[in-house]
View 1 (cartoon, rainbow, N blue to C red):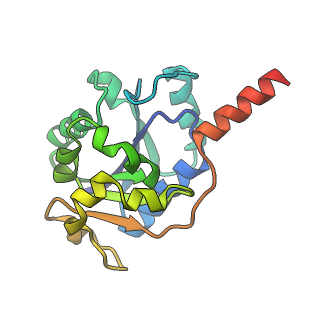
View 2: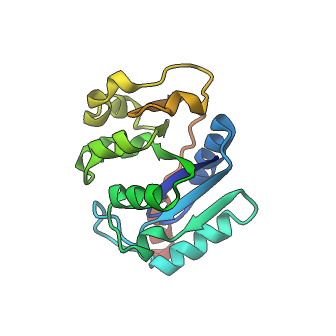
View 3: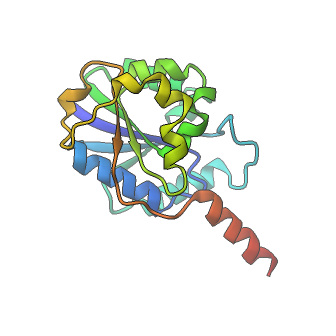
Length: 192
């Protein structure tokens, strides 16, 4: 049975932080593939600086030499919500074990995601440290709600995720980069 990591997001723009956590997840969990799920529109983000097609193109460019596939699942099923996307993927690809990959920054608002509790109950969650967010993330509503389901072993094995809910916190090297910073730098350069 294949094991695939899912990294969802706006990817506006995709950057080395996205690559790093994807490749770390693949190595640590011995995953067969990583899929980037590019969302047409994040419901928690109002601004849309880059078009969907630009973001897809940029994702394909940055992942060109890596074992990462760019998937347009959310666009093809007309989904705005991670829960809908995960639910569809799990139904459509029955013989694959999926893992939800995310940065610690996403935990701050995770309780605002549609059916966020069901996401924890439907898919193993692998969380990566993110510079400036870790302390708040560890105190987030989502992690406090599911604190009894944390996998704390230092050597991870996929078998630990067989009973859900299950999540873990990866003690990765932190990359100090974000899509917001990159967009802000582009704006500054545009006006200089």
